[in-house]
Length: 315
Ligand SMILES: [Zn+2]
Ligand SMILES: [Zn+2]
Image (cartoon, rainbow, N blue to C red; front, side):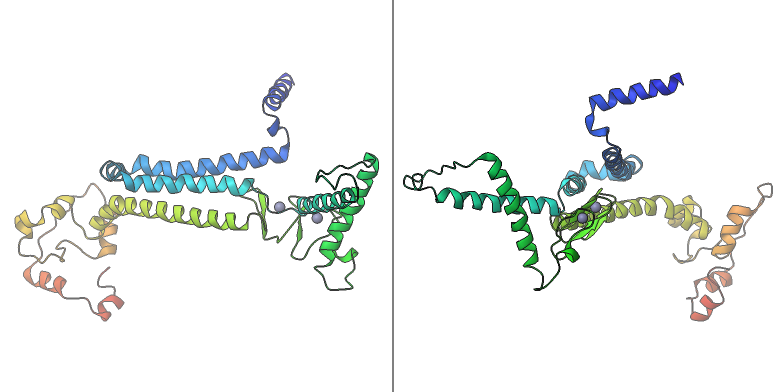
């Protein structure tokens, strides 16, 4: 119980220090962003830790790594720009239209004042409470008129009113259940960005997707290059029954002289080589005789379709 209280006190202190994390929804969004940044840092960071060749390449060609890091930073920056941008909420658009409508109403009211129009200065001498009431009325009219003009004549106001926001929806608008707001030109709600994608951030979103794709492909290529240079070589040796010494010093080794380059004299086929390497009992000494001239000739024979069908290359 005491521990629970202690935990509660700690979280209360955290919320006081960082008010933005007191809201569970904002806390989840913040956690998502931290997780995504960490994922990027680990994905790219591991590569620089394990791939010594990349570190060496960075020393020799700094511009290559600089370009990669630039893409990395630009991608993350684009992520934050997109997630922090408004997708175009109907309520914001409505407010903007209403304010504009109200301003034009006030201007038209002021222009009717005969004294003020002479010297160009605009003076409004109307009771404030009346202004507020007028603004509300004009606001509703501005937005309603604007939206209803976008629909065919005779469309019912009720059919284009969001039942959640109680706001008139222009065409291509949809109410997002996650944001609990109507979004202009709703595309989808992106859980990774923690926001809707709509009219206001659709372009930013595609820039982010393009940059993220380029970063993933580039990082993937670096991983494949690393794996190829560090894993394919041992596999190749096992599958062809060669030692590293035989691979590197082939031309200097007396018993391999005169054997064509692509012939592996001790190979018994990929499957058998793999089986012998992995499953052969370690307490038995295996001595492998050199192949005869006839066997070498047989091995150097080019593969035909029949050889592939009969698994000559593997068995
Ligand atoms: Zn709505
Ligand atoms: Zn949403």
